[in-house]
Image (tube, rainbow, N blue to C red; front, side, top):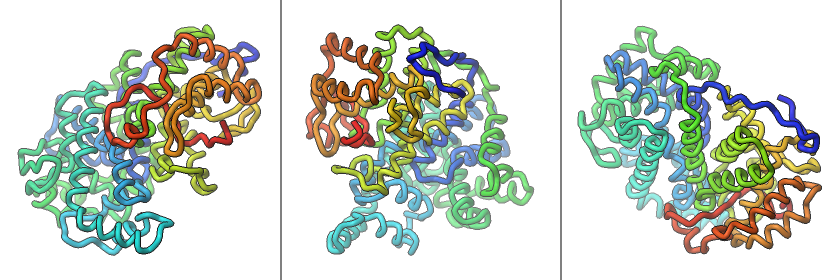
Length: 497
């Protein structure tokens, strides 16, 4: 899709079009896979596997709809424990999460692979004595840490499912996905048929996919058999083996299968018959996934919502039509969804990034676009969302676009995001006062930032009495606390602002 220049007064046409819940959710599962360090398509493959198990068990009607969305959204709370994981190990949260899925944490020992992954991610770059001490500390508190991590993920996951306006049974299935058949799982130690059937199916399906992708289908089936009666309901385990023997389980779920084919298979199973969403429902879905992104770091609390607020006000001040304002808001809410693929030690780093770390960060707008453009009604939105770090003089990233290639909407997002970045606390400095922010941005107008967008921002700040630059550093350090309105973006280096 071509870009247009705001200097020419032209805009891309925007037709919101019909969109279904399954189309949006199936696309956004790629973001959930990022935060878990999973092989792309994990949630979708889990959905196919779980639906085939559910169909064989006779799951139907409303319960089938609940199963369909619980399977895709089982990891929707995972971003909420990323900071805590980083605090515990001092290293890459995504790598540790990916490794943990391959471990039987119910056993007293840990595999050699697990030990290697843990050691590699404990306080990288620190002295050997510090790393050894942290390793011992983690080993001593492993059970408590594990329970805390699962509870954070499960509770937040259920909350987000409700934000998506799915029913309580779907939310409870997401909350219970780590309960075990013998009653020794989390978060509540439910046993046997106390665990909702949907959650039991989700638990089996996700383990099948993880081991099939990381090892082999045979390995996945062996793990299922080994954990039968412990983690998993024996009857479901037997059913899985029967479906495998009959060749009815793995279509579009093998490592060689194209992930888009897998997604189309998931969409074909939509038990809601691709019901079209209202515009208001789409907005709420965007808000829910914005909260998934913002939960990844205490320095991004409400960031996406904050950027959306600023961007909308700028767009309205500039006289953009209502349908364009709506587009800007959705793009702002979802602009950082690709950041779920950035490890927290980079997001939360209290200092300048290395070149290697910066190389990881600059990919996130590209990831944002690749996720969002899978939704037909989001294809234009995806372009704007992915251009929030571009600059008019070509010094932005990831594409180095110039003024002639940037639309009005992209320019609005760029100004709104950089304002948010400087108004928010970062690990290495407190948020700046609005007057100081304007002074800094003004120095780059019109070379990097659009003059009309900046003028609109100046007008807004004159009447925004609610705007405060930042919360205190003590509040920022409190994981999970509700804070006043504040803004941040972790990947804008000081020299680029």
